[in-house]
Image (tube, rainbow, N blue to C red):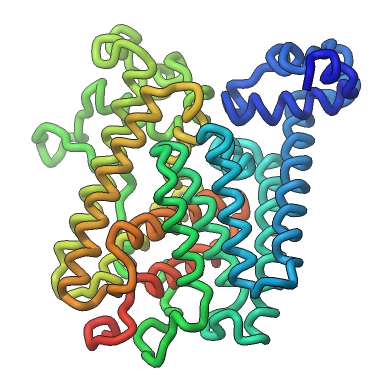
Length: 439
């Protein structure tokens, strides 16, 4: 479209289009009204005439996006030439292709905003919740009809299956924003089929949809990442002393979860931690270096937690993963849905704007995926993990389920989704045959 043709589009539509572009590129907090006006070639008075405030403008962008995504999903689900599972697979495959064509930039705007603003803005959270709930309900209705026609597995409620599908799609795009690797998205398309098709069940009782819930699994003593920090030895009757660096990292984790990178300021960190400004610049030098240090700490926490569960040899791989996920759920719920996934939050906000931080998230993610893949490969050798998929493919699917679950629930506050995802992880991992998988 030529510049002249674009200018014939009404101001309101041009601003909404510009907002969509800029929110993907810089996030909500990183997009100013002036930037929207410049991108749309619109006067400031027109912005306030149509929207009144930046928040109302953000709601309008999200509403337009949600309506478009729901219409796209419905078009696939209404196809009469495919069964229900193939319709959902086709929907995901086209989402992936669209994402590739944008140069790994435009995944899901609702998912991006959920990670950035759902916790800090109740009005945004409510609107995001509506977007996710409407999509889940459309999927649930389609899957229920598929169950009636024996096209979809019948051992799980349609709503739980819809929860799992929505989570795995959202989580897959988070990883792809960091990795810029389409292979994992293709693996997730295959995992959706594994989760939904009735032939996944075979004749074995061992991979039935689990009735165990994430909140009832082992590992309820999970500690927040900030609690793990080591401190110098101290007298039993004296409070532990924390270094300036440690105090800043602890506070940084909390504030980045709450406010995102754009909303976390050096002055805010110093005021909350009681650390002098000189100490911040002595230890970190720049804000980006500080965020990098927080990410490093966060990644180490997850690797250690996963290794702790893998070391419990009396458990099956499915049980080890259930314990790891239960740890994360415990942290998430005790924090009132704040501590979800820091890497996902940062990459949603900065994947396009900061290549160094995106690369660090990608490195953290690769380290975690490698550890998870080794865990699943060991389970295959023991015979308690399905051999139907390569460990790499199972790894991509499980990570996407976990990340996507927290992304969705931080907006919907529907904790039942966490139980649906716990059951889906077990279903993907467990063997169709074998004694250990049914323990």
